[in-house]
Image 1 (cartoon, helix red, strand yellow):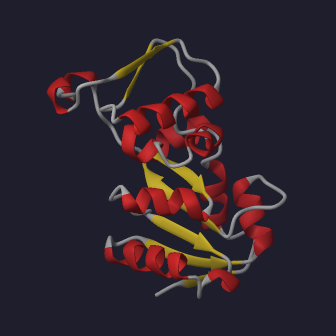
Image 2: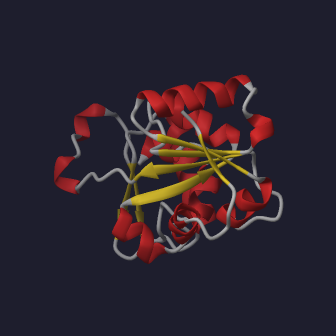
Length: 173
């Protein structure tokens, strides 16, 4: 059952807003994804959010209804809030109608089975989140098994990298 959040001082608003910073993402092992397209791509890849935020006027949209059902079925929490609070969570003046909080996948290099895909992409010291997103989208398009980041690379779960991936973070990470 969706819960209504009306105040900027709500602890959940503060908790989710903090996920925009790397140190909090590392502690919580969660990250943000914004927009109906990216959240639908995640769901199509079999990944439901642990927390779904949406505006009241988007509740009747068929894709939002699907996201709500999947989030609740997976034991996640659905929160309804104002566009102003969504803007605070996303850091954008014109946020999408939905924001999802996702568990960070953890795949150590030793757990990767190279035989599961004919191609794997490896990036060394990749610094730009936009370039990381491009590599994820390319890997998704060619059927790569994933993207392996070596040495000091940009955070693949930053809001900018997730946005640039256009949903490929859920198929390639």
